[in-house]
Amino acid sequence: MPQSQPNPSPLSIQELLDRCIDFLSASHVDLRSCSLVARSWVHISQSHLFRSPQLTAQRPGADTTQLTLSAILTSSPHLIHHVRQLHIPFHISRSAPLALDKLCMIKYTHLEEISIHINWRVYVPELLRPSVLSLPTLRWLKLHLSEGRQFLDTVPLFKNLSPTIQHLDLIVGPWEEPETPLRTSESSMVPPPIRLKSLRLELLAEPYDYRGRPMPPLDISVLAPFDVSELKALQLSRLNSVPWHTLPRAKIEILDVVLLEEAMDLSSFPKLTTLRITIPEALKESFRLVLATIPPSSRIRTIVIGIESWPLDEAECSPLDEHLGCLPLSGPVVIEFEIPFPQNEATEEILQSLFPRVVSQTRFRMSYVLLGDVETAKWKMSANWWREQVASL
Image (cartoon, rainbow, N blue to C red; front, side, top):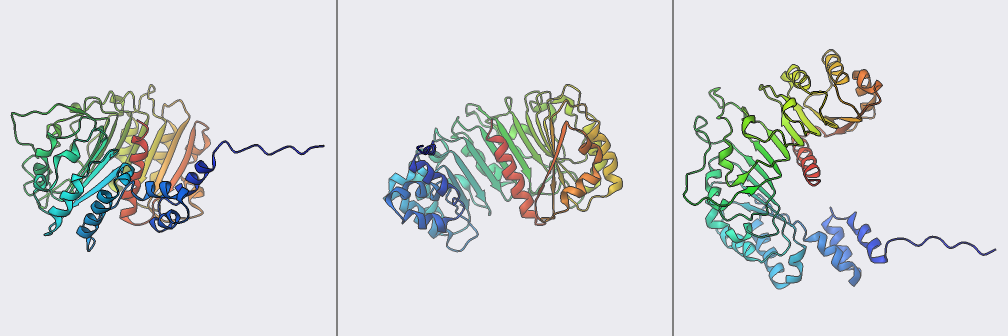
C-alpha cells in the first residue's frame, strides 16, 4: 500500500525563511550574520536592519552614527525603501547640524513614522528640513521635548506637515512659567487641518509646580493644525485638568488615562471598547467612582488596570472586586492587571484570591502582565500597549 505523501507547506521556501529571520529582528548582530549566509538571506535581513535605525543623542559618537547612516543610504539607495521609522535626536554639537541635514535630505520613499527627541534648548526649524515632515507616506509623528518652551520652537514646522499624518505622540517637559498657558503664536498663515485618529499626550512634570500651584489646563488649540474632531484613540498622562468638552468623547473607542483628582464620566464615551486606567496609590476610591459611571449600554470589552504598588491590600481590593463584579457589562470582558514587580509563580493565585467575585463570573476573563520593578519598564509597557492598540485603527 503506497504511503501517503505529507501535505506540502502552504508557504514557499523564501516565505519560510522570512518568517524564521523575523524572530531575530530584535538582534542586529544576528541579522548582520544572516545577511552574510547567502544571497537569498540578504534582502529580508536588510529590511529588518534598516526598518527602524536607532540614533541616540546621549551616546558618544551619535553624530558619527548619523553621518554613517546617511552615507550608507546615499551610497546604497536600494536600502532607502526599507526605512519605515526614523528617530531624529537633537543635541548640542558642532557636527549636529551637518549630520541632521544630510539625514533629512535623503528622499525617503516608504517612511511612515518620525520621532523627534529634543534634549537641549536648540532652535529646531534651523536644523530640521521641513521636507522630511511633508512626505506623503507619513502616518505617525512623535515629539519628545525635554522643556515645555521647546514646543513653541516646533510650531513653525507644523505648517509644512504632511496631511497624511494620523497619529500624534506629544511628550512635553515642564516649562518655566507654569501660570502661563502653553499656546502657539497667532499667525495669518493657517495650514489645512490634519485629522488625527489617535493622540497621545504626556507631561513629564508633576501636576503642581514647586510652589504648589496647579499647572495650567490643557489648551487644545495649541495642537493646531491637528484636528481632534475625529479622534478614535486618546492617551492622557499626568494632566492636572482635562477639557473633556473640547474632545470628541462620543467617537473615542480607546481611552488610556492616569487617574488624577478630577472625576471622569465614562457614560460620555458611548463607543468606548478598550479602557486602560492607572491608579495612583491615594486615588483608589476615585477609581471606584469612575467605574460607577459605566452605563449598561457600554461597549467596553477590555479593562486594563495599572497598579502602582504591590502587594495589594486585601481590605482595599474587596470593594474594588465588588465594583468590578457589578459592572453592567454583557460579556465577555477581559480584565487585565499590570503589576509592577518581576516574575512570580504565585501571581495568578494571589489575584484570584483578591478578586474572587471577578473570577467566579464567566463573563469576565482575568489576566495580568508583569512589568518589572523599573520605572523605564512601565513606561515602555505603556508605549508598546498604545502602539498595538492604535495599529488596529
